[in-house]
Figure 1 (tube, rainbow, N blue to C red):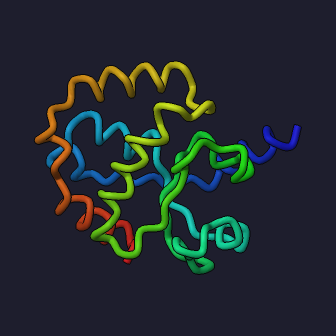
Figure 2: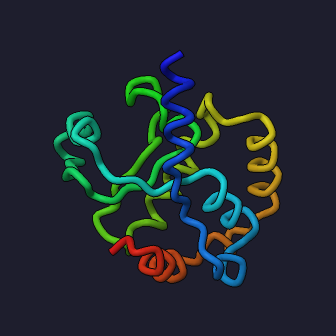
Length: 145
């Protein structure tokens, strides 16, 4: 099936948000999210075409997306499945919107990942979500400038 081919091709090209310093600065939940749920990608002509004009992106603009539904056509994914922050300063905000609006409703989330996600999120204090400066420096470390 085409989705299975797309899924395998997608796995082969995966780049996560994970950095070695995440464990120093971030909660277990955010470390899990960056390593297991989010991936870095570049905007394709299709991504550009599918964005609203008010949220316009450029071809090859760096973005972040849910790694579980990325193999699906845009119109088959739950809302906020991807984002294209205008700068590394906006990555944290973009991912928090994905946490609020996408991951809990993504139908492609494997059950065991969803279970870990829910447990870790439940045990995360609000203060542990406030690590914006690390998100920027980690993005720069990954070359996402």
